[in-house]
Image (cartoon, rainbow over all chains, first blue to last red; front, top):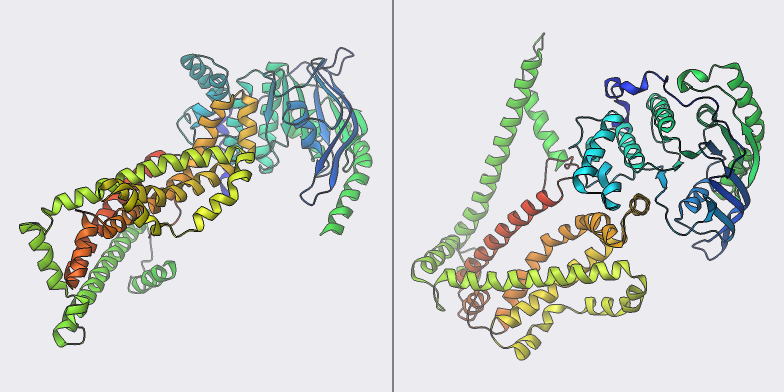
Length: 297
Length: 298
């Protein structure tokens, strides 16, 4: 997998080069009914050793319609747990999780989820992978395939419909995953470190592409990452979580104008300032988590 | 195996000339030439090995080092095969014996595979059932199952049913454990992804669990067909009126070592053919898998 990630030809992704059609810059958090609301959520797990482990403690968080919210925190602090609670893959031990004002019960067709590791089906080719969502949901086959072809073209994979995932590079597999999720037109998009396995160049391309797809979809996004640069470059709001058990330590509004070009925004003085401020907050948590890892090893 | 091939390759490249200017086509031509030469060498050595083995055996019996009465003799085995093909066996034409054994093995194999997959998937998906039945399955698996042959002969008679039953029992456990493990090993991310994309329980099974477990199940088919053959032949040893197992039994009872070897050769040919069929099936069903990195397969 490692070697194949490096070759992603720019000709595959014409959409990446201009970030012109992105969301208008007035999409900052508004005081309207939240799309996602976590109220004092606690999640405990039973470890294989028979002890309880608290991943989240009293975590409260709201996400506004159309908002791009980044959750950042040290590795293993419970960011992924938060996402699986919102997605209905897991239930909280205490507190409540509300999506569109209703308590979460199981998976919700309005939610899309992009996983950290490859979650495309290795036995399906690109076309069947992208068409899987609509087919699961009972869309007629002809229509599902038609929509899948359109989305494959949109993520720059036209001509690769018949390939199996193992024949694609890591970046291309990520595009399949994005198309697979976006074809269901989710109103809420959960992303769990989706680009962490990609090399830096491919990653920047994919980040720009994500912003573009998002702007056309007007979905709310919860984007989990441990990379502060990525969080600031993409999000309207960055929530810093504490080292596990996770709770919200600080919330920062990212007032950088949109449309953004992820590759260049890092040089913006305002970006540097924000990075500096948030890092002050994040650093302590990273150190705590680092010390713990050292002790346990 | 790889070390050996490297050695072979090195030995060959030593003799090659060192051109000052290499073009793409020259490199390609040299590579193809080297590959062809290597394949030729391997085939020649394989043939030599076979000739040495069989020739040594034949020579050993001629020189009195090996007693052909007990250990047979290649020319005698060949004679026996010719006799069977031309004049038929003591129980009737040769092809009928092959057909009988093959039919028993195939039926046993199919029933065993279907049962094994069904129970494997059921227990793989149902942790409660798996925990409940786990110890009994392990106990049943630890019994040497060929010992059931006399029981089946008593219960089901000397016809093909008793052989099919033995083959089923042998095949079932292999396929069952692989199907069970395959279902257990399904990537949790893939399951979560399918659920989020909107799959219901049946879709989850058909589109994610089954294809994922198929890698394991198909791997088990290779061994299970040979076990089905073992079941049929052992069943025939214990009591039967026709089949290759009976031929071996008869040959043994009449001190005909050549007959035992000849029947063994026939069985090996049947097993090899079935292996080819299963490999073709595997290629078709597991098209999506990356091709193996190593070109040497055993």
